[in-house]
Image (cartoon, rainbow, N blue to C red):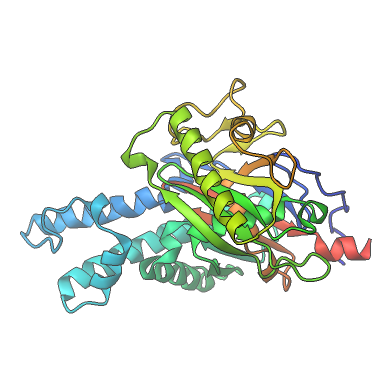
Length: 359
């Protein structure tokens, strides 16, 4: 252990937005970086990728050669872009490759900026998550950014997350709970609330002796693209509860014992009371402020689990997605995640396992 290793603290017991979790310390999350052009993170977001695509399409349109015709850029799926990149149309493939290249430059810039932050010092690995990471264009952008950083002598291991981001945002919730909460149970209910989508799932623990969660996996999950329906906050909460009720019913049919614990990831800064302080502006309705506690609203809509009122714990969605990688980070000590979605989520972690074992 190095002399500058942080002091070992007791893991938070079922705390919202907890910094000291069973396996890791959350050093920082939801960092907001600004420069003279605005928010730095916006340069490596899903919106930024679409903006770059639109800019290059406009240049081609001036020559009458836009390969995507009249299709709006925001309606061109990542799978479509993947197919075009590997297709036989050299102009279309060249367009997508150019967009990926320009986005990779922005991603490398954002990574450098994060590495200069005090709370991101000595980061050994950065994972790229979010929707873009599940596509070939996203993987290519990450790889190109990694090459650019290596060429500049920036020592960082850059790679995509292991699980599909739709599942990672659920799987990570098991690492919010102390092992005693999970003991004797087969799974938990988890939810991932985003600005576009809502996912609720049963995460099967598949625990080994000693509480090892390396094999945790999504058993079943339900998905709702709420942005298409433009629901109110109350309607969104009701739908979340309906999805949870359905999954609880299905788990019961399969004799899966669900712990009386629900983990929820959502955008923004979460305080110890479960209040979303900032960053919830893309959620349907007003989710920020003292008068709204997401955990209480969800708990009031759920049934008892294993004879107990469920405890609902809230944390930032980038933190939760990052926690899905805990079992894969045993070879390093300090690591972070950048989630490329509608915006850019971020979190930095320090492993606690070795420190706790040696304390």
